[in-house]
Length: 486
Image 1 (cartoon, one colour):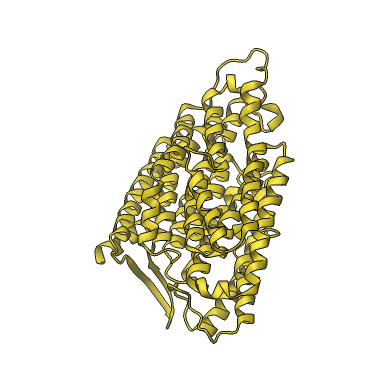
Image 2 (tube, rainbow, N blue to C red; image 1 turned 30 degrees about the vertical axis):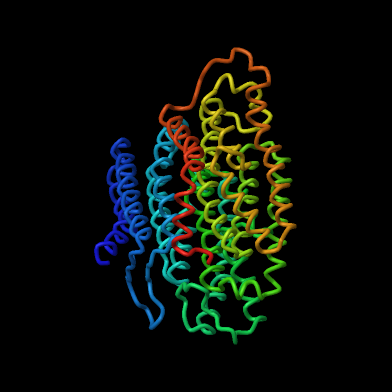
């Protein structure tokens, strides 16, 4: 176990060491960005090693510090954390490649600060992924919030500062007034904060108290963006596109729904959730979030805002699966974290490429641009089909299992919600490549893609949408053998 404990140290500390290298190389951009890429490759290698150890049923555990008896910074890797960290580690590399082209192509200022905060955010996301208990999760969850605030306000404009205030205000206030009290009450009532198979509460725990706690957790984890705790996400779209990619695919929102999923499975457990009447109401709120966000997305002409509301809807899928708590639903939620990560990061990469190459930000401005940026809009169409849930793309499998989970849990209404949502996905996502390829091209149109390194990143993530369809069975088998959701 010792060797694998060391690997957890490498994963958590290498990004922080990279910050030192990034700051020291601030005058040499190639060296600075080389530090980010090399560190990303190393971190991904170690996350892959940890994933393999979990697949072999080996214990991967590390304790940093015990503050009080039963209250410690403690890491222990389960199947859910292994999957989340693997995706975040891989996408750090790809997002860094994309950011090099974007940040240079747009001549962004404060690039050293950008790469430094990005590295801290990745370390925090890994801390969330590997948390053995709620206290550890909370600490790294808050570090993630604070480290991404400078990224949201990167532009330094009044609009960026206003978006940053909304971002920080909502996420910090939900943590302080909802999430933290829920953790304290759990510690007092259950006597532990450790994640445990089947949950930590006994059969004698008051159902009223557990219902209250479930509400605090679901809305206190503001990064999950369940309505009405969602306004921070569209507000944060003032950030540069690589930051939007970080928010939507690599770390922030995925850390939110990951936390909700882990709390539902390992703090409450299936038996407790199914016996709480409030669970049903929260399921309906998740369903409402899925549909309402899709309807709002259809009305957005700003491309990044349309994608932001799409993300809120897709996060609702994961929260829904966590609350349904059947094995199929939990597996579907975990798969959706992965599938949505690759699909949505591709869409944001494409939005940024359009902006860098042609300074267009509105859906109404992309008419005919498929002839100008064929690779970008082909990737956009591919990723859209994955999020819609059509084969042969990865998004099909996560939606399939979420629909099965809805039936297993007796919520036929949620099957209808997921079906309607997929139809709405078609309307607000496929409109964009359709306008790009089937509308007349702009006058004097010429082939001009974004910087080649950014296009390379787009190609990799879009092809991963196909790969996830092919290799989803391996991931599904891994989750089942680990007992997730059982």
